[in-house]
Length: 562
Image (cartoon, rainbow, N blue to C red; front, side):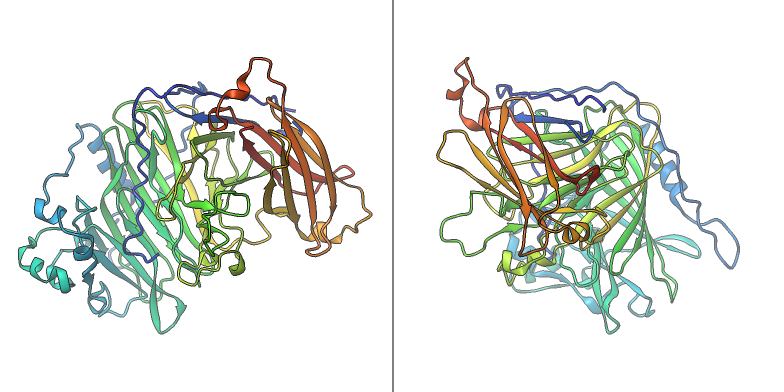
Protein backbone atom coordinates (compact mmCIF):
# COMPACT_ATOMS: atom_id res chain seq x y z
CA UNK A 1 0.00 0.00 0.00
CA UNK A 2 1.38 3.37 -1.03
CA UNK A 3 1.73 5.85 1.88
CA UNK A 4 -0.73 8.72 1.60
CA UNK A 5 0.53 12.22 2.28
CA UNK A 6 -1.97 14.68 3.69
CA UNK A 7 -1.52 18.39 4.21
CA UNK A 8 -4.05 20.61 5.93
CA UNK A 9 -3.15 24.27 5.69
CA UNK A 10 -4.90 27.36 7.03
CA UNK A 11 -3.28 30.77 6.78
CA UNK A 12 -4.26 34.34 7.44
CA UNK A 13 -5.38 36.25 4.40
CA UNK A 14 -2.52 38.51 3.30
CA UNK A 15 -3.67 39.74 -0.04
CA UNK A 16 -6.44 39.66 -2.62
CA UNK A 17 -7.42 36.35 -4.14
CA UNK A 18 -8.59 36.76 -7.72
CA UNK A 19 -11.06 33.95 -8.24
CA UNK A 20 -12.84 35.33 -11.31
CA UNK A 21 -14.28 32.47 -13.30
CA UNK A 22 -15.20 34.43 -16.48
CA UNK A 23 -18.52 32.59 -16.71
CA UNK A 24 -19.64 32.45 -20.33
CA UNK A 25 -23.42 31.90 -20.35
CA UNK A 26 -24.50 35.01 -22.16
CA UNK A 27 -25.38 33.70 -25.57
CA UNK A 28 -25.71 29.99 -25.12
CA UNK A 29 -29.00 30.12 -23.22
CA UNK A 30 -28.44 28.67 -20.50
CA UNK A 31 -6.41 3.90 4.29
CA UNK A 32 -7.39 1.15 2.46
CA UNK A 33 -7.66 1.65 -1.24
CA UNK A 34 -4.34 3.26 -2.07
CA UNK A 35 -5.83 6.73 -2.37
CA UNK A 36 -3.56 9.70 -1.77
CA UNK A 37 -4.90 13.18 -1.38
CA UNK A 38 -4.07 16.72 -0.42
CA UNK A 39 -6.69 18.99 1.14
CA UNK A 40 -6.39 22.71 1.65
CA UNK A 41 -8.77 25.18 3.21
CA UNK A 42 -7.74 28.35 1.44
CA UNK A 43 -8.07 31.54 3.44
CA UNK A 44 -4.97 33.36 2.34
CA UNK A 45 -1.48 32.77 1.01
CA UNK A 46 -0.33 29.20 0.49
CA UNK A 47 2.33 27.30 -1.39
CA UNK A 48 2.50 23.62 -2.22
CA UNK A 49 5.54 22.23 -4.05
CA UNK A 50 6.17 18.81 -5.58
CA UNK A 51 9.59 18.43 -7.12
CA UNK A 52 9.34 15.48 -9.51
CA UNK A 53 9.83 16.42 -13.20
CA UNK A 54 7.06 15.82 -15.70
CA UNK A 55 7.58 13.62 -18.69
CA UNK A 56 7.13 15.58 -21.88
CA UNK A 57 4.94 13.87 -24.44
CA UNK A 58 5.66 14.91 -28.00
CA UNK A 59 2.65 13.91 -30.05
CA UNK A 60 1.67 15.98 -33.04
CA UNK A 61 -0.82 15.49 -35.80
CA UNK A 62 0.62 15.41 -39.31
CA UNK A 63 -0.46 18.24 -41.56
CA UNK A 64 -3.19 17.39 -44.04
CA UNK A 65 -2.50 17.17 -47.74
CA UNK A 66 -4.56 18.36 -50.65
CA UNK A 67 -6.08 15.40 -52.53
CA UNK A 68 -5.55 17.29 -55.80
CA UNK A 69 -1.91 18.32 -55.40
CA UNK A 70 -0.65 16.12 -52.52
CA UNK A 71 0.73 19.40 -51.13
CA UNK A 72 1.02 19.74 -47.37
CA UNK A 73 -1.64 22.06 -46.07
CA UNK A 74 -1.90 23.97 -42.82
CA UNK A 75 -1.87 21.79 -39.68
CA UNK A 76 -0.84 21.57 -36.06
CA UNK A 77 2.92 21.76 -36.83
CA UNK A 78 2.28 25.21 -38.34
CA UNK A 79 0.49 26.38 -35.20
CA UNK A 80 3.29 24.97 -33.05
CA UNK A 81 5.83 27.07 -34.94
CA UNK A 82 3.66 30.15 -34.52
CA UNK A 83 3.41 29.48 -30.77
CA UNK A 84 7.16 28.90 -30.51
CA UNK A 85 7.91 32.16 -32.31
CA UNK A 86 5.34 34.05 -30.26
CA UNK A 87 6.86 32.75 -27.00
CA UNK A 88 10.28 34.14 -27.94
CA UNK A 89 8.93 37.70 -27.85
CA UNK A 90 7.35 39.70 -25.00
CA UNK A 91 3.59 39.39 -24.60
CA UNK A 92 1.50 42.08 -26.30
CA UNK A 93 -1.95 42.57 -24.81
CA UNK A 94 -4.46 43.44 -27.54
CA UNK A 95 -6.92 44.97 -25.12
CA UNK A 96 -7.31 48.69 -25.57
CA UNK A 97 -7.54 48.48 -29.34
CA UNK A 98 -11.32 48.12 -29.39
CA UNK A 99 -13.35 51.36 -29.47
CA UNK A 100 -14.14 52.38 -25.90
CA UNK A 101 -17.79 53.03 -26.68
CA UNK A 102 -18.19 49.39 -27.72
CA UNK A 103 -16.97 48.27 -24.30
CA UNK A 104 -19.52 50.53 -22.63
CA UNK A 105 -22.65 49.22 -24.34
CA UNK A 106 -25.29 47.64 -22.14
CA UNK A 107 -26.09 43.97 -21.78
CA UNK A 108 -29.37 44.55 -23.59
CA UNK A 109 -27.57 46.18 -26.52
CA UNK A 110 -25.15 43.28 -26.86
CA UNK A 111 -28.05 40.83 -26.64
CA UNK A 112 -29.84 42.73 -29.41
CA UNK A 113 -26.92 42.15 -31.81
CA UNK A 114 -27.64 38.76 -33.32
CA UNK A 115 -25.91 36.75 -35.99
CA UNK A 116 -28.12 36.08 -39.03
CA UNK A 117 -28.43 32.27 -39.40
CA UNK A 118 -29.04 32.51 -43.14
CA UNK A 119 -25.48 33.88 -43.47
CA UNK A 120 -23.84 30.99 -41.67
CA UNK A 121 -20.47 30.11 -43.11
CA UNK A 122 -20.80 27.18 -45.57
CA UNK A 123 -24.62 27.47 -45.62
CA UNK A 124 -24.70 28.13 -49.37
CA UNK A 125 -22.38 25.20 -50.08
CA UNK A 126 -24.70 22.89 -48.09
CA UNK A 127 -21.76 21.41 -46.22
CA UNK A 128 -22.36 19.20 -43.16
CA UNK A 129 -20.99 21.80 -40.74
CA UNK A 130 -21.67 25.52 -40.46
CA UNK A 131 -20.07 28.35 -38.52
CA UNK A 132 -21.77 31.28 -36.84
CA UNK A 133 -19.98 34.15 -35.14
CA UNK A 134 -20.20 36.30 -32.02
CA UNK A 135 -20.04 40.09 -31.95
CA UNK A 136 -17.43 41.80 -29.79
CA UNK A 137 -18.22 44.36 -27.12
CA UNK A 138 -18.98 44.78 -23.41
CA UNK A 139 -17.52 41.64 -21.76
CA UNK A 140 -15.67 40.60 -24.90
CA UNK A 141 -12.95 43.23 -24.97
CA UNK A 142 -10.69 41.72 -27.63
CA UNK A 143 -11.28 40.08 -30.98
CA UNK A 144 -9.90 36.87 -32.42
CA UNK A 145 -8.82 36.01 -35.93
CA UNK A 146 -10.71 33.15 -37.55
CA UNK A 147 -9.44 31.42 -40.68
CA UNK A 148 -10.80 28.74 -42.99
CA UNK A 149 -8.35 26.08 -44.19
CA UNK A 150 -9.12 25.56 -47.88
CA UNK A 151 -7.43 23.55 -50.61
CA UNK A 152 -5.34 26.66 -51.26
CA UNK A 153 -4.36 27.08 -47.61
CA UNK A 154 -5.68 29.30 -44.79
CA UNK A 155 -8.05 32.11 -45.78
CA UNK A 156 -9.21 34.74 -43.24
CA UNK A 157 -12.95 34.87 -42.54
CA UNK A 158 -13.71 38.57 -42.66
CA UNK A 159 -15.94 40.41 -40.23
CA UNK A 160 -18.87 42.40 -41.59
CA UNK A 161 -21.75 44.16 -39.89
CA UNK A 162 -23.92 42.63 -42.63
CA UNK A 163 -23.56 39.29 -40.87
CA UNK A 164 -25.51 40.61 -37.89
CA UNK A 165 -28.86 42.21 -37.23
CA UNK A 166 -28.77 45.18 -34.87
CA UNK A 167 -32.20 45.28 -33.27
CA UNK A 168 -34.05 47.42 -30.74
CA UNK A 169 -31.55 49.07 -28.41
CA UNK A 170 -28.63 48.23 -30.74
CA UNK A 171 -30.05 49.79 -33.92
CA UNK A 172 -27.94 52.95 -33.72
CA UNK A 173 -24.72 50.97 -33.20
CA UNK A 174 -24.35 49.40 -36.65
CA UNK A 175 -23.11 52.56 -38.40
CA UNK A 176 -20.44 53.08 -35.72
CA UNK A 177 -18.95 49.57 -35.78
CA UNK A 178 -15.59 49.43 -37.63
CA UNK A 179 -15.73 47.12 -40.64
CA UNK A 180 -12.45 45.50 -39.59
CA UNK A 181 -13.56 44.89 -36.00
CA UNK A 182 -13.22 41.10 -35.96
CA UNK A 183 -15.19 38.48 -34.05
CA UNK A 184 -15.39 37.63 -30.36
CA UNK A 185 -15.69 33.90 -31.12
CA UNK A 186 -17.63 31.33 -33.09
CA UNK A 187 -19.89 28.31 -32.79
CA UNK A 188 -20.20 25.14 -34.82
CA UNK A 189 -23.51 23.75 -36.07
CA UNK A 190 -24.27 20.21 -37.21
CA UNK A 191 -27.24 17.87 -37.74
CA UNK A 192 -26.78 16.22 -34.36
CA UNK A 193 -30.46 15.89 -33.40
CA UNK A 194 -32.38 15.91 -36.66
CA UNK A 195 -31.50 15.78 -40.38
CA UNK A 196 -33.61 18.89 -40.98
CA UNK A 197 -31.79 21.33 -38.74
CA UNK A 198 -28.19 22.04 -37.78
CA UNK A 199 -28.03 22.50 -34.01
CA UNK A 200 -25.21 24.16 -32.17
CA UNK A 201 -22.71 21.51 -31.04
CA UNK A 202 -19.65 23.48 -29.91
CA UNK A 203 -18.63 27.03 -29.15
CA UNK A 204 -15.32 28.86 -28.64
CA UNK A 205 -15.91 32.15 -26.85
CA UNK A 206 -14.04 34.14 -24.21
CA UNK A 207 -10.43 33.60 -23.05
CA UNK A 208 -9.64 29.94 -23.82
CA UNK A 209 -13.14 28.72 -22.95
CA UNK A 210 -15.03 26.27 -25.11
CA UNK A 211 -17.83 23.80 -24.61
CA UNK A 212 -19.88 21.24 -26.47
CA UNK A 213 -22.98 19.10 -26.27
CA UNK A 214 -23.92 15.63 -27.39
CA UNK A 215 -27.24 14.58 -28.86
CA UNK A 216 -30.34 15.75 -26.94
CA UNK A 217 -28.32 17.88 -24.52
CA UNK A 218 -28.18 21.48 -23.39
CA UNK A 219 -25.02 23.41 -22.64
CA UNK A 220 -23.67 23.03 -19.13
CA UNK A 221 -20.08 22.99 -17.94
CA UNK A 222 -17.19 24.47 -19.92
CA UNK A 223 -13.64 23.46 -20.73
CA UNK A 224 -10.58 25.64 -21.20
CA UNK A 225 -7.36 25.42 -23.08
CA UNK A 226 -5.24 26.02 -19.99
CA UNK A 227 -5.61 27.07 -16.35
CA UNK A 228 -2.87 29.19 -14.79
CA UNK A 229 -2.50 29.89 -11.06
CA UNK A 230 -6.12 29.01 -10.31
CA UNK A 231 -7.02 29.92 -6.69
CA UNK A 232 -3.56 31.35 -6.10
CA UNK A 233 -3.36 34.47 -3.89
CA UNK A 234 -1.44 36.23 -6.67
CA UNK A 235 -4.50 35.99 -8.91
CA UNK A 236 -5.42 33.75 -11.80
CA UNK A 237 -4.04 34.35 -15.27
CA UNK A 238 -6.44 33.69 -18.15
CA UNK A 239 -4.74 32.70 -21.42
CA UNK A 240 -6.78 33.30 -24.54
CA UNK A 241 -7.10 31.85 -28.01
CA UNK A 242 -6.03 34.71 -30.25
CA UNK A 243 -6.39 32.95 -33.60
CA UNK A 244 -8.31 29.96 -34.98
CA UNK A 245 -8.06 27.88 -38.14
CA UNK A 246 -11.08 25.73 -39.05
CA UNK A 247 -10.74 22.96 -41.62
CA UNK A 248 -13.28 23.30 -44.40
CA UNK A 249 -15.42 20.12 -44.24
CA UNK A 250 -16.02 17.84 -47.19
CA UNK A 251 -19.60 17.01 -48.24
CA UNK A 252 -19.84 13.80 -46.21
CA UNK A 253 -17.59 14.63 -43.25
CA UNK A 254 -18.82 13.71 -39.78
CA UNK A 255 -16.02 15.48 -37.95
CA UNK A 256 -14.42 18.90 -38.08
CA UNK A 257 -10.93 20.08 -37.08
CA UNK A 258 -10.16 23.33 -35.29
CA UNK A 259 -6.65 24.65 -34.60
CA UNK A 260 -6.04 27.41 -32.08
CA UNK A 261 -3.15 29.63 -31.05
CA UNK A 262 -3.08 30.41 -27.33
CA UNK A 263 -1.33 33.44 -25.83
CA UNK A 264 -0.85 34.97 -22.40
CA UNK A 265 1.63 36.88 -20.27
CA UNK A 266 3.74 33.83 -19.39
CA UNK A 267 3.06 31.25 -22.07
CA UNK A 268 1.86 30.42 -25.57
CA UNK A 269 0.29 27.27 -26.92
CA UNK A 270 -0.75 25.39 -30.04
CA UNK A 271 -3.96 23.36 -29.97
CA UNK A 272 -5.75 20.92 -32.22
CA UNK A 273 -9.36 19.83 -31.70
CA UNK A 274 -10.89 17.10 -33.85
CA UNK A 275 -14.59 17.39 -33.01
CA UNK A 276 -16.89 14.42 -33.61
CA UNK A 277 -20.52 15.22 -32.69
CA UNK A 278 -22.89 12.43 -31.79
CA UNK A 279 -24.55 10.59 -28.95
CA UNK A 280 -21.21 11.16 -27.24
CA UNK A 281 -19.46 14.22 -28.66
CA UNK A 282 -15.71 13.71 -28.75
CA UNK A 283 -12.89 16.23 -28.97
CA UNK A 284 -9.59 14.58 -29.83
CA UNK A 285 -7.22 17.20 -28.41
CA UNK A 286 -3.51 17.87 -28.69
CA UNK A 287 -1.59 20.81 -27.26
CA UNK A 288 1.98 22.03 -27.07
CA UNK A 289 2.74 24.74 -24.49
CA UNK A 290 5.72 27.09 -24.46
CA UNK A 291 6.53 28.96 -21.26
CA UNK A 292 7.91 32.48 -21.51
CA UNK A 293 8.65 32.45 -17.78
CA UNK A 294 8.02 30.13 -14.87
CA UNK A 295 4.55 29.64 -13.44
CA UNK A 296 3.43 28.41 -10.03
CA UNK A 297 0.60 26.25 -11.29
CA UNK A 298 -0.47 24.91 -14.67
CA UNK A 299 -3.80 23.16 -15.08
CA UNK A 300 -4.04 20.76 -18.03
CA UNK A 301 -7.47 19.99 -19.55
CA UNK A 302 -9.26 22.35 -17.13
CA UNK A 303 -13.02 22.12 -16.65
CA UNK A 304 -15.31 24.72 -15.11
CA UNK A 305 -18.78 24.10 -13.71
CA UNK A 306 -21.42 25.25 -11.23
CA UNK A 307 -22.66 23.64 -8.04
CA UNK A 308 -25.09 25.72 -5.98
CA UNK A 309 -26.71 23.02 -3.86
CA UNK A 310 -27.78 19.38 -4.01
CA UNK A 311 -28.97 16.55 -1.79
CA UNK A 312 -25.68 16.73 0.13
CA UNK A 313 -26.17 20.43 0.97
CA UNK A 314 -27.94 22.26 3.76
CA UNK A 315 -27.96 25.68 2.11
CA UNK A 316 -31.11 25.48 0.00
CA UNK A 317 -32.72 28.95 0.15
CA UNK A 318 -35.91 29.10 2.15
CA UNK A 319 -39.11 28.62 0.17
CA UNK A 320 -37.29 27.71 -3.07
CA UNK A 321 -39.19 25.01 -4.95
CA UNK A 322 -36.15 23.57 -6.75
CA UNK A 323 -34.62 20.69 -4.74
CA UNK A 324 -31.21 20.90 -6.46
CA UNK A 325 -29.34 23.37 -8.66
CA UNK A 326 -26.10 22.33 -10.32
CA UNK A 327 -24.50 21.76 -13.72
CA UNK A 328 -22.43 18.94 -12.24
CA UNK A 329 -22.50 16.92 -9.04
CA UNK A 330 -19.16 15.15 -8.75
CA UNK A 331 -15.50 14.81 -9.69
CA UNK A 332 -14.55 11.35 -10.97
CA UNK A 333 -10.96 10.13 -11.28
CA UNK A 334 -9.57 6.91 -12.75
CA UNK A 335 -6.11 6.23 -11.35
CA UNK A 336 -3.25 4.49 -13.12
CA UNK A 337 -3.64 1.44 -10.84
CA UNK A 338 -7.25 0.98 -11.93
CA UNK A 339 -9.02 2.55 -8.95
CA UNK A 340 -11.98 4.88 -9.39
CA UNK A 341 -12.61 7.86 -7.10
CA UNK A 342 -15.83 9.82 -6.68
CA UNK A 343 -15.83 13.20 -4.95
CA UNK A 344 -19.29 14.78 -4.57
CA UNK A 345 -19.20 18.50 -5.25
CA UNK A 346 -19.92 21.01 -2.52
CA UNK A 347 -20.58 24.73 -2.11
CA UNK A 348 -18.27 25.63 0.78
CA UNK A 349 -18.17 28.73 2.96
CA UNK A 350 -14.52 29.26 2.08
CA UNK A 351 -12.36 28.27 -0.87
CA UNK A 352 -11.52 24.55 -0.85
CA UNK A 353 -8.61 23.12 -2.82
CA UNK A 354 -8.27 19.32 -2.90
CA UNK A 355 -5.48 17.51 -4.72
CA UNK A 356 -5.61 13.80 -5.56
CA UNK A 357 -2.30 12.16 -6.40
CA UNK A 358 -2.67 10.94 -9.98
CA UNK A 359 0.56 9.99 -11.71
CA UNK A 360 -0.16 9.05 -15.31
CA UNK A 361 -3.92 9.36 -14.81
CA UNK A 362 -6.20 7.05 -16.76
CA UNK A 363 -8.92 9.71 -16.76
CA UNK A 364 -10.78 12.37 -14.84
CA UNK A 365 -13.85 14.50 -15.29
CA UNK A 366 -16.61 16.61 -13.83
CA UNK A 367 -19.82 14.61 -13.99
CA UNK A 368 -23.55 15.32 -13.86
CA UNK A 369 -24.55 11.88 -12.59
CA UNK A 370 -28.05 12.76 -11.37
CA UNK A 371 -30.33 13.05 -14.43
CA UNK A 372 -33.67 12.76 -12.64
CA UNK A 373 -35.88 15.74 -13.52
CA UNK A 374 -37.79 15.33 -10.27
CA UNK A 375 -34.59 16.22 -8.41
CA UNK A 376 -34.43 19.63 -10.13
CA UNK A 377 -37.99 20.63 -11.10
CA UNK A 378 -36.63 23.30 -13.45
CA UNK A 379 -38.46 23.43 -16.78
CA UNK A 380 -36.22 26.23 -18.10
CA UNK A 381 -32.69 25.38 -16.99
CA UNK A 382 -33.22 21.60 -17.39
CA UNK A 383 -30.23 20.60 -15.30
CA UNK A 384 -31.15 17.00 -16.08
CA UNK A 385 -30.01 17.67 -19.67
CA UNK A 386 -26.54 18.95 -18.76
CA UNK A 387 -23.52 17.01 -20.08
CA UNK A 388 -20.72 15.35 -18.18
CA UNK A 389 -17.16 15.92 -19.34
CA UNK A 390 -14.50 13.21 -19.23
CA UNK A 391 -10.82 13.60 -20.10
CA UNK A 392 -8.99 10.46 -21.26
CA UNK A 393 -5.23 11.15 -21.46
CA UNK A 394 -3.16 9.61 -24.24
CA UNK A 395 0.28 8.35 -23.34
CA UNK A 396 1.89 8.81 -19.95
CA UNK A 397 1.58 12.30 -18.52
CA UNK A 398 4.10 11.75 -15.74
CA UNK A 399 3.85 12.74 -12.09
CA UNK A 400 1.11 15.07 -10.95
CA UNK A 401 -2.30 15.25 -9.37
CA UNK A 402 -5.87 16.13 -10.16
CA UNK A 403 -6.81 19.34 -8.38
CA UNK A 404 -10.36 20.32 -7.47
CA UNK A 405 -11.16 23.94 -6.57
CA UNK A 406 -14.54 24.70 -4.98
CA UNK A 407 -15.50 28.34 -4.45
CA UNK A 408 -18.44 29.73 -2.49
CA UNK A 409 -21.39 30.98 -4.51
CA UNK A 410 -24.78 32.40 -3.64
CA UNK A 411 -26.29 32.13 -7.11
CA UNK A 412 -26.48 29.66 -9.97
CA UNK A 413 -25.15 32.23 -12.47
CA UNK A 414 -21.60 31.86 -11.15
CA UNK A 415 -19.24 29.05 -12.05
CA UNK A 416 -17.61 27.94 -8.80
CA UNK A 417 -16.08 24.55 -9.61
CA UNK A 418 -12.75 23.99 -11.38
CA UNK A 419 -10.85 20.75 -11.98
CA UNK A 420 -7.66 20.02 -13.93
CA UNK A 421 -4.55 17.87 -13.91
CA UNK A 422 -1.54 19.65 -12.46
CA UNK A 423 1.93 18.46 -13.51
CA UNK A 424 4.47 18.11 -10.72
CA UNK A 425 7.00 20.16 -12.66
CA UNK A 426 6.75 22.77 -15.42
CA UNK A 427 10.27 23.43 -16.72
CA UNK A 428 10.90 26.62 -18.68
CA UNK A 429 12.70 26.28 -21.98
CA UNK A 430 11.18 23.08 -23.30
CA UNK A 431 7.72 22.49 -24.77
CA UNK A 432 5.10 20.69 -22.73
CA UNK A 433 2.99 18.40 -24.89
CA UNK A 434 -0.24 16.64 -24.00
CA UNK A 435 -2.76 14.59 -25.92
CA UNK A 436 -6.21 13.62 -24.65
CA UNK A 437 -9.79 13.01 -25.68
CA UNK A 438 -12.62 15.04 -24.18
CA UNK A 439 -15.98 13.31 -24.07
CA UNK A 440 -19.20 15.29 -23.61
CA UNK A 441 -21.82 12.72 -22.69
CA UNK A 442 -24.55 11.43 -20.44
CA UNK A 443 -23.15 9.13 -17.73
CA UNK A 444 -23.38 5.41 -18.39
CA UNK A 445 -22.37 2.19 -16.65
CA UNK A 446 -18.90 2.02 -18.20
CA UNK A 447 -17.33 4.79 -16.11
CA UNK A 448 -16.91 3.30 -13.56
CA UNK A 449 -17.59 -0.29 -14.63
CA UNK A 450 -18.56 -1.41 -11.09
CA UNK A 451 -20.78 0.01 -8.38
CA UNK A 452 -21.09 3.79 -8.20
CA UNK A 453 -22.29 6.42 -5.76
CA UNK A 454 -25.70 7.80 -6.72
CA UNK A 455 -26.39 10.00 -3.70
CA UNK A 456 -24.59 11.49 -0.71
CA UNK A 457 -26.69 12.85 2.12
CA UNK A 458 -25.80 14.20 5.53
CA UNK A 459 -27.56 14.57 8.86
CA UNK A 460 -26.56 16.56 11.93
CA UNK A 461 -27.52 14.76 15.16
CA UNK A 462 -28.04 16.62 18.43
CA UNK A 463 -24.55 15.86 19.73
CA UNK A 464 -22.14 18.76 19.09
CA UNK A 465 -19.81 18.19 16.15
CA UNK A 466 -21.27 14.81 15.21
CA UNK A 467 -22.12 14.20 11.56
CA UNK A 468 -23.94 11.32 9.90
CA UNK A 469 -23.38 10.32 6.27
CA UNK A 470 -25.79 8.32 4.13
CA UNK A 471 -24.28 7.05 0.87
CA UNK A 472 -26.27 5.13 -1.73
CA UNK A 473 -24.42 2.83 -4.14
CA UNK A 474 -25.91 1.22 -7.23
CA UNK A 475 -24.68 -1.10 -9.95
CA UNK A 476 -25.54 -4.41 -11.62
CA UNK A 477 -23.30 -6.47 -9.35
CA UNK A 478 -24.80 -4.83 -6.26
CA UNK A 479 -28.30 -5.58 -7.47
CA UNK A 480 -27.46 -9.28 -7.72
CA UNK A 481 -26.39 -9.47 -4.07
CA UNK A 482 -29.26 -10.43 -1.76
CA UNK A 483 -29.88 -8.70 1.55
CA UNK A 484 -28.26 -11.52 3.51
CA UNK A 485 -24.92 -11.28 1.69
CA UNK A 486 -21.86 -10.21 3.65
CA UNK A 487 -21.39 -6.79 2.05
CA UNK A 488 -18.96 -4.72 4.07
CA UNK A 489 -18.43 -0.99 4.22
CA UNK A 490 -14.79 0.03 4.43
CA UNK A 491 -14.59 3.52 5.93
CA UNK A 492 -11.39 5.49 6.60
CA UNK A 493 -11.34 8.74 8.56
CA UNK A 494 -8.39 11.12 8.38
CA UNK A 495 -6.70 13.04 11.15
CA UNK A 496 -9.00 15.16 13.30
CA UNK A 497 -12.01 12.88 13.63
CA UNK A 498 -13.02 9.33 14.44
CA UNK A 499 -15.59 6.83 13.26
CA UNK A 500 -18.40 6.32 15.76
CA UNK A 501 -20.49 3.65 14.04
CA UNK A 502 -21.43 2.31 10.62
CA UNK A 503 -24.06 0.14 8.96
CA UNK A 504 -24.49 -1.39 5.52
CA UNK A 505 -27.80 -2.71 4.29
CA UNK A 506 -29.68 -3.52 1.11
CA UNK A 507 -31.73 -0.74 -0.43
CA UNK A 508 -34.88 -2.67 -1.23
CA UNK A 509 -36.28 0.19 -3.30
CA UNK A 510 -33.41 0.68 -5.75
CA UNK A 511 -31.74 -2.70 -5.52
CA UNK A 512 -28.49 -1.03 -4.48
CA UNK A 513 -26.83 -0.84 -1.08
CA UNK A 514 -26.72 1.96 1.50
CA UNK A 515 -23.78 2.79 3.72
CA UNK A 516 -24.51 4.86 6.84
CA UNK A 517 -21.81 6.00 9.23
CA UNK A 518 -21.29 8.64 11.90
CA UNK A 519 -18.15 10.63 12.73
CA UNK A 520 -17.21 12.98 15.54
CA UNK A 521 -14.23 15.28 16.08
CA UNK A 522 -11.26 14.16 18.11
CA UNK A 523 -10.97 15.67 21.60
CA UNK A 524 -9.18 18.99 21.35
CA UNK A 525 -7.21 19.82 24.50
CA UNK A 526 -5.87 23.00 22.89
CA UNK A 527 -9.33 24.56 22.91
CA UNK A 528 -9.60 24.83 19.12
CA UNK A 529 -13.29 24.05 19.38
CA UNK A 530 -13.76 27.81 19.70
CA UNK A 531 -12.42 28.32 16.18
CA UNK A 532 -15.22 28.93 13.64
CA UNK A 533 -16.04 25.77 11.73
CA UNK A 534 -15.21 27.31 8.35
CA UNK A 535 -11.63 27.98 9.55
CA UNK A 536 -10.97 24.46 10.76
CA UNK A 537 -8.93 21.99 8.68
CA UNK A 538 -10.70 19.52 6.46
CA UNK A 539 -11.06 16.00 7.77
CA UNK A 540 -10.71 13.68 4.81
CA UNK A 541 -12.84 10.55 4.59
CA UNK A 542 -13.19 7.73 2.11
CA UNK A 543 -15.39 4.69 1.82
CA UNK A 544 -16.22 1.80 -0.49
CA UNK A 545 -18.10 -1.48 -0.41
CA UNK A 546 -16.60 -4.93 -0.70
CA UNK A 547 -17.89 -8.49 -0.66
CA UNK A 548 -15.42 -11.00 0.75
CA UNK A 549 -12.20 -10.19 -1.13
CA UNK A 550 -13.90 -8.36 -4.01
CA UNK A 551 -14.15 -4.57 -4.22
CA UNK A 552 -17.67 -3.78 -5.37
CA UNK A 553 -17.63 0.00 -5.86
CA UNK A 554 -15.68 3.10 -6.61
CA UNK A 555 -14.15 4.95 -3.66
CA UNK A 556 -16.28 7.73 -2.23
CA UNK A 557 -14.21 10.62 -0.83
CA UNK A 558 -15.29 13.65 1.16
CA UNK A 559 -13.87 16.46 3.25
CA UNK A 560 -15.62 17.96 6.26
CA UNK A 561 -14.90 20.66 8.80
CA UNK A 562 -16.05 19.58 12.28
